[in-house]
Image (cartoon, rainbow, N blue to C red; front, side):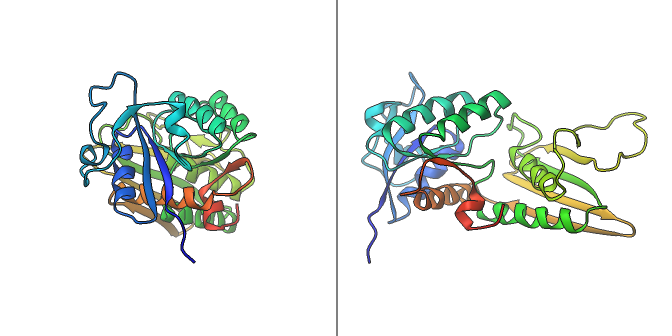
Length: 271
């Protein structure tokens, strides 16, 4: 049985991830580009969304955000920033459009606003839309539970332009460790070490962030026990993996009831 192409609106279509999503849509027969939103007064408004993203020409131009443009879509894919994502979330809810949310750096108050929006719309939210990272988080959760006495350190590296640290993915993996051990991440997270800090505290979940070059994303979770160490890692080689994961999430979410979902739901993994 044939399936109609899914109509996708792209938030932040001039950004790195927005352009990757546009390319992924135009390279697939399963999706069509319904709208490509840029910020108001962006200098590239009116340009062809496909050629701007380095793909074949599209019938869609870069436009300012509008309710009318949103209404043309089945799903919105959003890799922007928290404040913009909340505004997009309101428009998506009003238009009954699935919101695939890959933005990171939300404050607790903003997270609460996302949860409130999910009461009236379908939101798939993840700090990393990669199918591989989603599986990694599940494995980390299991390993942290099984090796409950091992020390845990999370190392991440990204390109020089990334503005938040630790990365959203590193925090997602930290949450997986915390969930596996039934303890809150906020009370056990160690973000920096400098000077005479004393011995490592039991139960600490350490984070280290590296920045440089054009690295798309590298994450390793190290579980260190007596005379042995387990390392679970993921290397992102191209932003297209996040774009394709987001498109898979948009397809999966069609027909779902209002609520806040994750990529683990998309893959059918236990939380």
